[in-house]
Every structure is written in C-alpha cells, then in structure tokens.
Image (cartoon, rainbow, N blue to C red; front, side):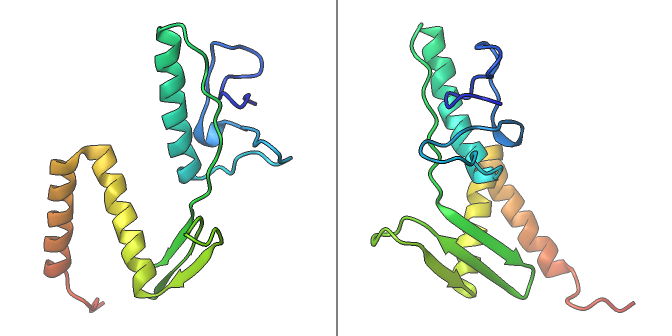
Amino acid sequence: MVEQTLQATRDDNVFAFGDCAACPQPDSDRPVPPRAQAAHQQADALFKTLRNRITSGDAVPFVYNDHGSLINFSHYTTVGNLMGNLSGRSMYIEGKVARLFYVSLYRMHQVALHGPVRAGIIWLMDKISRAMQPRLKLH
C-alpha cells in the first residue's frame, strides 16, 4: 500500500511503483491499474520525487493518465482503444492502423530500454530473421 506520492504507508523512506504498488487514484475508490503504462508514468513521478528529495524538496503526487490499450492477436489482428483524442472521448481502432500503433509503441519501448543504436540493431535483426525463416512450418 502506498500513498499518492508512491511512499509506503508505513515508512516514508520506502517507495514502490508498478505491479507492487497499490496506489490510490484521486476521486476513485479503485487503485491505479497494474499495467505497464501506469508503471512508466509512476517511474517518471518517482524520479521527480527522488530528485526533489536530494534537494530537500517535496514529493510529487502521482496522477494516472489512461492513454488507452492496444492488444495484438499475433498475425490475425490488432485492436485498441485510444483515450484523450481531440474530442475528449475514446476512439476504437483495429486492423492495420492498430497494428502500426502497436509496433510503434513496442519500438519506442525498446529505444527507452536499450537506446536508439541498440534498438536499431534489434529492429534490423528482427527483419533479417523474419526474412530467413520459412513462412510455413513443414513438420
């Protein structure tokens, strides 16, 4: 259990984020959902809090912002629900557009984890291995 600042309820010097943090949402009785999107946002808020603590500043309260979900069903299709478009409502997408969004998000995640050079090498290796593998298993 954590406060909205991601500090543990029992010790102000212990922080948690991601799946191991039951973080309250303002104006809701449900905690922040345990999703990668939430963990990424919590990591950003926690970084700011820890940076502030070094300079004896205040903890940054975390507020979850749902950007939607994308689900990839292998080679069959991809579906998604994008939040916060210009009209303020969610938008349902599927097919090739959703697949493009999904792949772009995946590659952005790789860049964040490995850096642009390594992510480029990973992308290139994915292309090469896809070209080398047979399209049909013969066994």
